Length: 289
Image 1 (cartoon, helix red, strand yellow):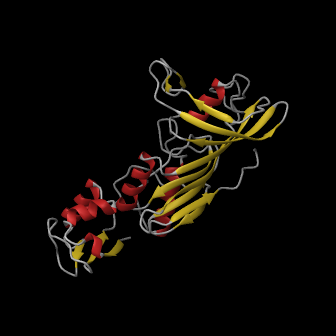
Image 2 (cartoon, rainbow, N blue to C red):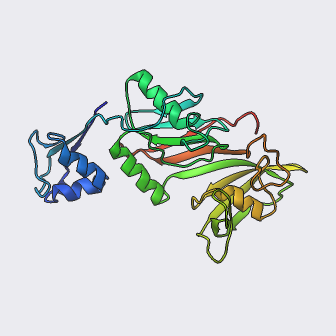
Image 3 (spheres, one colour):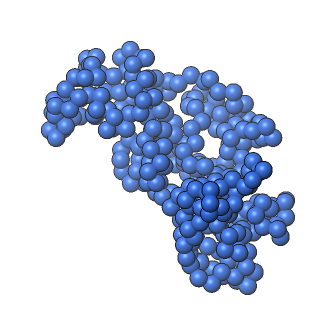
């Protein structure tokens, strides 16, 4: 479906060039390209403007994002997942465990992307699969999808600037008695496509704050907040301090390959890409945790 956005220019923005104003609103190169390639997608006071036009207080700028075409190769296959929140600009999904996000060689039809594609076709309301935050296949919980090119540009920028605040729950092995912060760089493990490791010489900066919520003799429930977003960050960091995640067959030698790492994307907080309002979401804790 088309997405229609309208803004009124205020006094403080008077005299600014339209293109500079659009960039400040969050229009990326891709959004500007859509405007250039679709006649009538941008209007100022009902007329076609030029990017270099200066704005006046009270100007009404209208942006219409056209219906995007289905150019993906994602096969629509029904999958089980729940939608926590949805509007014209984004969808927040509660992803179940052992469901990969994107198709791959070994997971061509059994992914979240396949399920979203199927749902779009049932609704006759297609939008490309734009996943803003990443979750491993075994991780449950909150995932943000951007439903149009404008919201995706703003949400990706928020991720880049670490303005999307992510809180996870994890069940780790052993009794962890104190909360703390892990500041250890992470890199890809030599000769492995998937596995990561702490690498002080070549790794990327990675910081995880963790808080003990409930400790038992053999397992501990912790709350983790990411300052950075490296692949497998929580899994690698908890292994590094001697408390790998329960069920994590990559980083926990005692884990069974039949389960999943007990990691849950619990809370997300960010600014709505269009309204700018603060929003936050919570996913129910899965039964296996």
